[in-house]
Length: 460
Image (cartoon, rainbow, N blue to C red):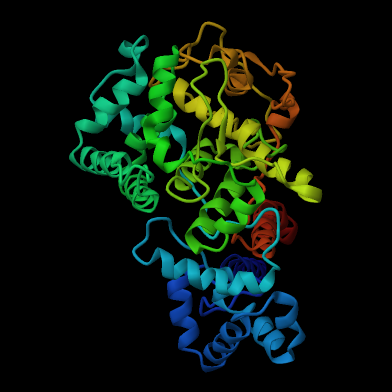
C-alpha cells in the first residue's frame, strides 16, 4: 500500500515538472521566433493570414486612432496579438533583417501611437558580456594587454584592425567613401558614407570595432583620433544642428534607424535596479546598441577631444523646441549625461567588466583576503579619463573584494548595500519566460524537497 502511494506521488510530480506552461500552446505556437519565421507560420493559418492582410491595409496611410475606430481593424489587431507575430523578434545583422523589422513594426506600430518616448527593442536580448570581448580581443590582436599599459590604445586598435583582412578592407572602404569630396559645395556623399559605416560595424567583429570606438586615452591627440574614427566631418557634422526631436522623428520613419534607436534606449536606459546603472548590468549590450546607431541619421559621436570626461551626443540641439523643450532635453541627456553609457565606455577602455555576486539571499557575502588581486585584463585600468578612476566602475566591480563602499557621485549612487548584493536583481527587460510555468516548477521542487518526510509519514 505504501509503495503504491509513493508511486502515485512520483507520477503526480512528474506530470507537474513536464507539463507545458500555463497558456502555452503544446504545438509551440507562442514559442518566440524571428519575425520572418513568424510571418511564415501566420501565412500557414488562414485566420491569421487574413487578419494580417487586413491590419496592413488598416495601417496604410492612417494614424492609430483612425485605425482603431474601424471595428474590422480592431478585431484584426486583437487576433494578431494572440499569434506568434506579437512575440517575434529580430537578430541584428541577420540575412533578412530589414524584412524582419518591417514585419515587427507592422504589428507594434498598431499597438502604439508611435509617439512613445521609449520604444521596446525589436532585437533579441544580448546575452554576451564584455569579458567575452576582452578574451577574443586579446587572442585576435596577439598582444598581451599587461605589457601595453602606456601605449596609445587607439593607435593599437588601428594596427590590430590592419592585421585582419576583413577589418582592414571595410575600414579602408568607409574612410575612402567618407573622405571623398563631391564638389566645392558638397563636402561628401553622406548617404554612401553612412552605408559604408553600417557595413563596417555590422560585418566586422566587435573585438575590433569596440577597440576603435572605445579605446582609452591619456592625451588629447589620442582622444582626437578616437573622435575621428567615424570620419565625423561627413558622417556626423553638418552646417547646422537640427532639433533633436525632429531628428528623432526623421529616424523613426526608417525601420532600421527606428530599431537601432529603440535598441539603444532598451539597453542603455538608466536602471536604478543595477550596480552599474545599465539594464541587467550588461555593458556589452549598451555598447553594441550604441555602435548599432552609427551610419544612420541618429549617428552619435564624442563631442570633443577632452580626456577629463566622456561625452557623446547625436548632432542636434534643443533650440526651437517650444513647449517640447523638456522632452527634448530628456532625450538629449540619454546621450550626454547617461551614466550607463559612460560607465560602459570607461569599463571597456579600462578592460574591466562588472562581476556580480551569486544570487543566493540565504548565503552571506564572503570577503576574500585583502591581498588577492584580480587578473590583469586588456588595457590599463589607470589609463586615460582619470576623473573616473575612483568612480562607480572601480567601486562596483570590486564590491565583492573589499566590501560595499557607496560612491556619492553627482549622477547618483550606483552601488547597493551588502544585503542588496545577495538579492535576486532582475533587469528591466522583457522576457519570454512564463512566470506561471516557473512557479509550478518551483512548487514541484518544494514538494520534492519534502518527499522524504512524506514517505516517513506514510510508512508510519
